[in-house]
Image 1 (cartoon, rainbow, N blue to C red):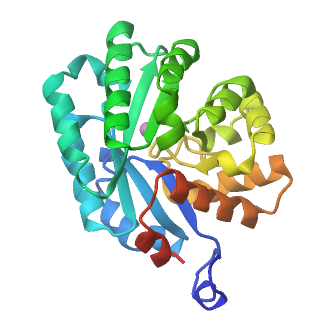
Image 2 (cartoon, rainbow, N blue to C red):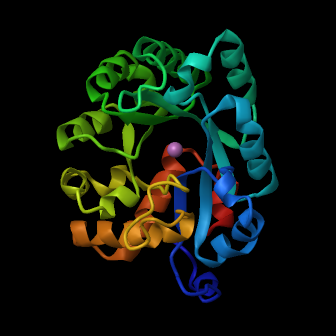
Length: 281
Ligand code: NI
């Protein structure tokens, strides 16, 4: 919990947020990234961020952001969209990157059968290989699964021992409550972001209502997935309060409890070094 003394120093918001999934390297942040990271986000209570580098070919931009900012950690992996560009050299590059102690997880990795930008068998192959790497390095994973829950669960079950040991996050969860339950039983947390506020969120609302808060982390996926009432605008971590408020309404809990608990969950799941977590106290 934050100390009263520190909280009195806060601006408009006394709560601290952990955005467990951001893409601040995206070109849509080029014009105001520095200002956002150095002043706007800290002033809005955003105290930890996991910046996700999802294309190894362009990871340098994310790595620079992670290196230059104490409160920004990261994840790296080959997104299923780019699976057809992955090869053994890419796996070695990823293995080397993960020696950076500010890179906390392998991700986002997974399967995307909605866009099918890479052939499905190629997606499955490199998803599996990257899960093996996470196992070898004892790291959590950040998973991107879209319209592929059946194949995903088959693959995850085969990695059950490693997942139970190292954990991870089902990013932008879009499955049923039954799938969410099985993911949690496999040691994964459920990543919830702007889509919770969308009109068609009936299934996700049911998931949010039923899963224990101890298994939920907040995320933006910015610049995508902007929550209501800002849809159509670029998303950024200052919009996390809209997701937290919606989750509080669904779970009939105080928003402070939602925010503090999901912050702690993010630190636990991504194993944020205790020095950084303490800085955010
Ligand atoms: Ni993402």
